[in-house]
Image 1 (cartoon, helix red, strand yellow):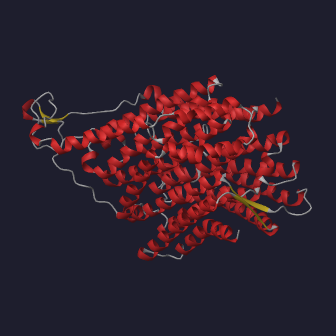
Image 2 (cartoon, rainbow, N blue to C red; image 1 turned 30 degrees about the horizontal axis):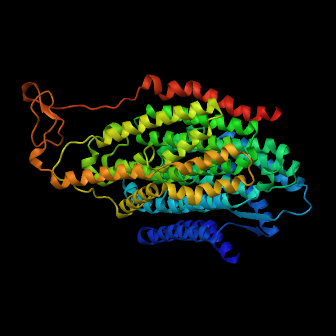
Image 3 (cartoon, rainbow, N blue to C red; image 1 turned 135 degrees about the vertical axis):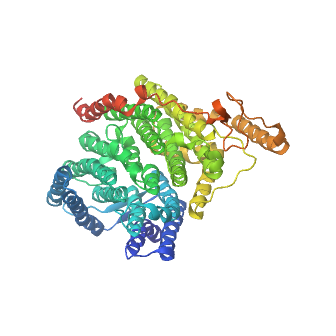
Length: 635
């Protein structure tokens, strides 16, 4: 037990203390050493905690008392920010939160404070590994990225030492969030991640950055208020501030559960709350990668999955499933109309988080297995893709997809890694496809949810295939030169790309060894034979033909490289003579011997899939679905 407590202390307090040391003004080599040390600390500690196995740890009541005082302190920090940015909604919501928090100190029914428990179960271990390993790699990438960013950042940008403080502290707060069972501590860590995101999004200090940070803290303050209200009602009606107790309280806990679901949906940027996450794209790329893959939004997914058993066979669960499925389909449609690479990734993130919520609401073993599969593979692939886009943007000066034509020659390493990441989001034998297949299987008894999941999956193929086609459309060159980027950036990209490939090759073994046992453990003595039959049917999936086909493709590619001759290459014939020795094989001679270039453009179908077109009706519909979370309580 002492070893586990030490590991948890290192996972939660370690990054925060390392971050504080960076606020002393460390620069250059000294700061790099501290960032590397903090990343290695959380990665190693997470691995050791996972190896220690599932257990519960009870902390003294003094810890609960400490949380009772730290929670209002964190809310006061939110209130101070509301005053600083002159936002009356943030001030109002923080004020109400503070009142609820102080009232909870005096109105708690229990004669003595509850003991605070730490839950080290399969779900929290998976989240700790995602936060610590992927988050740790992102902080290492940030060393190279921010070294370049400092040179062209606006004069209004905050000090880089402050940036690394919030980036590293974020990891500690997220680890605490997924391990603690006490509502006060959960609220404390929840608000802490909101504060970190506010400062990270607004790092550059531009008008856009300030507006985006303001939007992020405003919407997440609403989620924080919902969580505080849920904690207050739980303490008043149930007499307990334990999240596990609330989950098992049945009907009297439906209102707190609905409030927790609302908080989770806001945190995971579900429609109609997606604008804060889209605004986060103005932040430096490591922030985007961290928010979208391993922290912030994953806090919402974690809470939804933690609530899944409590929502079983209820109208609340059905409503969460419909809301998530609608977000999945709508966000996938919105991604089609985007030419900004980061926005495509953002809408893809929102969509997949919606699919996780859908599976949690359906609450069958195969649905839970699908949610876990998507949670794991999405975190790794999306972090990789954000880092690839950030590297491309620093090199070509643009994040727009139409400007990425020819980057297969300009940036062969980054582009090939990006291709792996995109393929992993939609193609076999990668885990995301298996997760979506299980999600469709789990929705067969809910026609509306099934239709939305199928529609979202089809739209997903459209925008990923379009982007893949754009970056692989390149002219012929005899030789390719690997681009020069920071060793920190290239090293992390190669490591994460290898991780995606390894998880691809081991998708089914991971399912058998981890995903399926966890799903069965969560459901315990479930009697739904049909659900178990669906879960067992995944065992019948034959993955070896996919690897045979993949191996044949790789072998054919290697063979062609070994035996082809440059003299056999024929450039594509355009409307005139091809220009010899041009930078692109798409150049040709036109009138008056003028050199022209053939233009290649992707379809964005803006009249159909434009943001203004879709959000005009999707946001009101999504808001109505969210409101039914509370309407179903009276059914």
